[in-house]
Image (cartoon, rainbow, N blue to C red):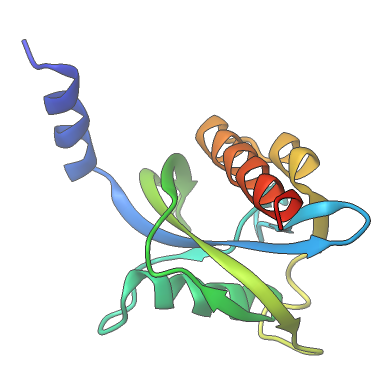
Length: 157
């Protein structure tokens, strides 16, 4: 019988990898806000993410996805803050389990025009509301912990 750690490791080998940015900013009235975008097919609220890009580090891939999907520029952390899993439906209707590494992106500006502007809706939410909008429980928890941690840092400054 496999231990939980061994089972999780073997499960990861069967997962497809993706990298995501968690776009955030501080709003003086709302506190920590998270930007969510709708997915192109299901129109669910998600964070910008995508497949690995050859020759690019994971955090750079995450930042590029945020720029393409929401026109965002900012400071991306090199270290991931967590991960989550979800089922991705591919164009051939095959469903694959994806493991997504998440990198915080402090948003400094947004372009007026970007590649997927007409394919998605984007919206800034206070972090607790953003967490309630996403379907994935692991992502919800990640947003809540991140937002609460940033909020504490802001009140201590």
